[in-house]
Amino acid sequence: MRPPLAETDTQAMDEAVTTWEELVELEPGLGPLEEEARAIADDGTMSFFCSNYVWLPLTSSLQQLIGVRRRGGQGKVAEPLLYDSRAYEVAYLHLSPLLPPCRDCGCHRFQPLRDEQTLMALDD
Ligand SMILES: [Zn+2]
Image 1 (tube, rainbow, N blue to C red):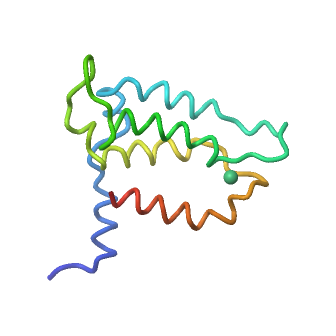
Image 2: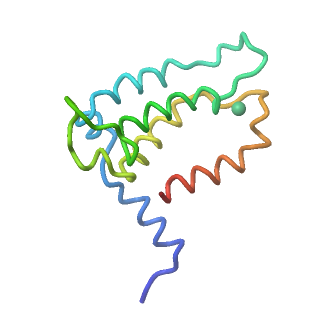
């Protein structure tokens, strides 16, 4: 018997296709991206901090390194896993939580939408 859809989704999430460490080995460009993410701090000198705002350029860089939008070409590893959207999910879920949370920005209004888009991105 086919399990309910929600259960299937949960199982899919539990069985990640790869790990962050394996991805960094295959695509060394991910290492500096992680350093960049870890270096982002909300030092409190601004009246607000927006995690989504600083996430945008990072996710653009990430998309060029991994997933269906990966840029191949000379000197680039032709490993199929690096073009896999599930590998992108693994990288996304590793990097995204490294950023400090939003503070006093307008995101609380848009957070439900962002969650929805994240889920949609994961479904790609
Ligand atoms: Zn924000």
